[in-house]
Length: 184
Image 1 (cartoon, rainbow, N blue to C red):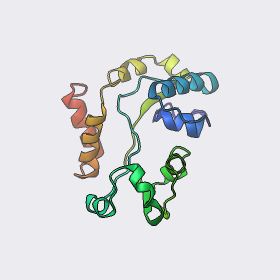
Image 2 (cartoon, rainbow, N blue to C red):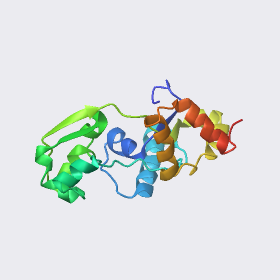
Image 3 (cartoon, rainbow, N blue to C red):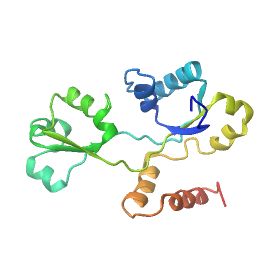
Image 4 (cartoon, helix red, strand yellow):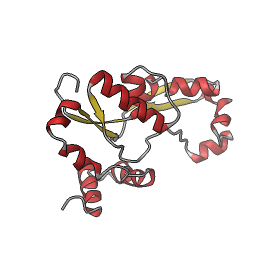
């Protein structure tokens, strides 16, 4: 975007804050958004538009039979067992300060090993170069209809159609947009 190769892009506030700006993590989602919005405008002339509304936080999952066998119900329970377990996560999570490293530091444990996995599709708030937005303010207006339209429950349902039911991502997106009356 900074070179002008890309005009608009969906981005996560956490990625923008930590990986792009090199700032420490902020627990409050609104405060994180406000900070990246301000800093991107000041430093990069990139405008953060209104978020779509869902939260893409990381979670830990384990097969229920394995969790029951090991007596793991909470992350705290995981602490005494982590040294004998392998963490499977996206390569990004393994490298992020607020990913594996932050998890292990916060809870005081280390996994025996970690294995990188390919991520599923990712989504985020749209960011746009300021010069493009000046020339085409209608872009922000068009995307504004999506602001807050996708809550966590709806996003989980859509991701399930793609990841679990193996439906085509474009078809899932089009069906959702049609169901909301946003496209024909």
